[in-house]
Length: 150
Image 1: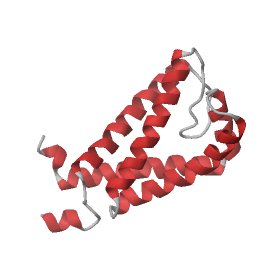
Image 2 (image 1 turned 60 degrees about the vertical axis):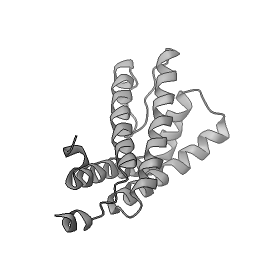
Image 3 (image 1 turned 180 degrees about the horizontal axis):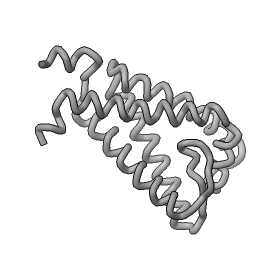
């Protein structure tokens, strides 16, 4: 348990989580129409909400990822990432339960399959666990804080 609270571990976790969300957000920014199609395939939102979500979420992911890496506002950033993970998880779970085969669109578009949806849900749970851990530990390990704690 001590290792999980180590400043270096928390710094690496923050950076990895931040990079994942920056990368995912940039991919979606590059093709918002494909991301909107992915959102529509979940059959959860009306048309206007799909467009708003497809345009607003990628920059939100990028900003949250950057803030997490910088470490200045790691608790609010990790909270935002956790909320995104919950949203993604609920969307994937409801699609699986309804028998839909959708591409989550998290890292670009691809061929939908139930197996990939299950893998995406598992990945989402890992990301949620990381974000929740950063939030609950109250990590204030910025780029230099870990060095100062040594």
